[in-house]
Length: 456
Ligand code: HEM
Image (cartoon, rainbow, N blue to C red; front, side, top):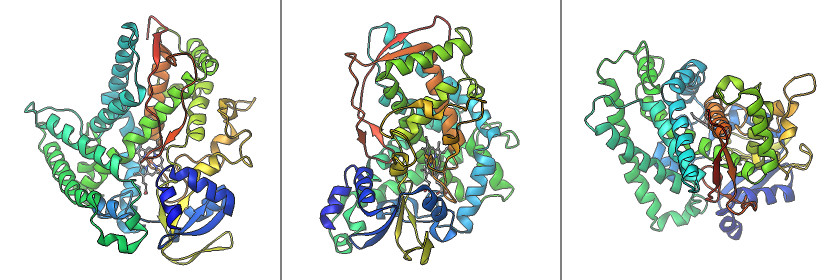
């Protein structure tokens, strides 16, 4: 299996897809020393990830160093995880808090990005959505978590730069498959990434400590009316709803789990629409008819813009940015669909293969937004709630950031397309090949952009 392990380091999800097609809906393979169960059928995955026995995390050595397995993403299924997960779902990422940070920070950042793209287009310059959207999303997530600089000492901005550098290091290194995770004797070889991870852990902790401390000492702080998510956490720690040592971990979780994922979703959607001018024209027509030139699309317009929403959903299926979820681990021998998942096995939810399985999708390798349009009587498409459409995962560890991600991606996509038309540089489709990483990204690309509306 050594050869297969090397193959898995690149395009991991495509290699896993090939293995799934060869060995079936649930299969047990051995990656080096690690028994790995791959689940590639929606019913089996729903059953598996609904079981507490399979809701622990399989954690790589590098992520173990970076997280201590104490944060929401990587903590084992247990009391600490449950407390953070409940808080994230019910309070931290609630509609009320999302509305608050959207109005204070997110909408302004999105509008700024659209203005920047418009200016570049008017100057005859191309735009590079992956880089620009990544920048605006990290700014957006940082502001949502830590709010705005109010003390004017420059410390806040310095910490912001340092934290983003740290998060980028994690993006660049966290998924590099480390053979020592699978082949124990390799742990005795020098490993630069692991040495750096120890240092990065210290750096990350020091920065978040300073930022949380800064928020606590913010002039005029009123925890009964939080202005950003760290203030929501501080308020909750005060009442004992969460432990104060959870605050740093939750801040890092939001920045790591929330930034790249949303940015790649927007980058993919723009690329797919630029490659398909006829689809983009339908989105423009819908925006013109429903919103018009004198208003801006809002979060409440989703049902009024069904075709645009269908494009976003289809983009999340067609290019699944979290193709293998986050690895789970079996706490004890567990049965799924009559098969044994052995204790200690890594369990991979093969969302990518489920999203591309012809048993559940007609022409799965084609981009067809129409499959997500409401029925003729106006009811939401069955595909949207089907267990074969699971970009945010399923079961106990499913994504608590779904509302957040859908809102920010929606605002980006609708506001950009409301004002702008995107075209490929020479009119021919650009590559839609995927680059494997913490989230699957397109290859870097640039587009021509033209202003459509005088308003907006
Ligand atoms: C389009 C964007 C996003 C996608 C496709 C996505 C997808 C996922 C997936 C597939 C998982 C793993 C589920 C599992 O292991 O079974 C996950 C977990 C998670 N996501 Fe997201 N996510 C997105 C955005 C966000 C955002 C914006 C946040 C925070 C604001 C977030 C926070 C988390 C957290 C904290 C977890 C870990 C949950 C746990 O282990 O209990 N995600 N996400």
